[in-house]
Image 1 (tube, rainbow, N blue to C red):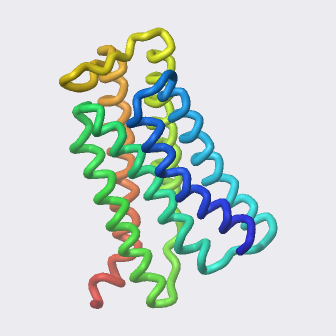
Image 2 (spheres, rainbow, N blue to C red; image 1 turned 45 degrees about the horizontal axis):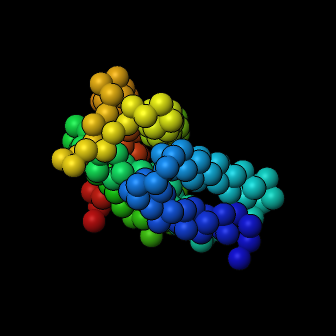
Image 3 (tube, rainbow, N blue to C red; image 1 turned 180 degrees about the vertical axis):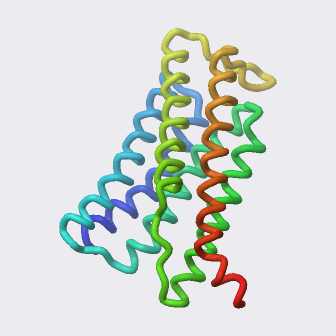
Length: 194
């Protein structure tokens, strides 16, 4: 297995550690969550860069790199949903888009076609990573100043943190939706002929 593919597998391995750091209460667990999240995001950029630079693009990488990205982001979204923020609807829409696009891409690969990433797709990936990363960073900062309190009935976030998450996720969700429409438009002929 080449290095980019090993990095892709490593991103899958990061997922249970991300869940553990976020869900198990220990001192500075949000700081650890943020570090693991950043390592996962960096690995996403790293594997693609190495694969292109060294010209070692493989079928494994084409299939599992986007799956690793989606699984890693889904895990991050589930952590934020678990906190009780009212972002469930937008996160569900984001994930529906991800699975629809994955289906279109699989249909294209069966036909020997490739639907290239568009500017909206690249923008939505960047926005998703930044939005979640800032949320984890803010939790880590609040944790250090002891503003984050876990109550018996759930999570008690500072108001500004919830406002940020709601606004940022809806902006990200709109960009994600637009990129999904573009992918469906590019791959519609594959669906229509089935």
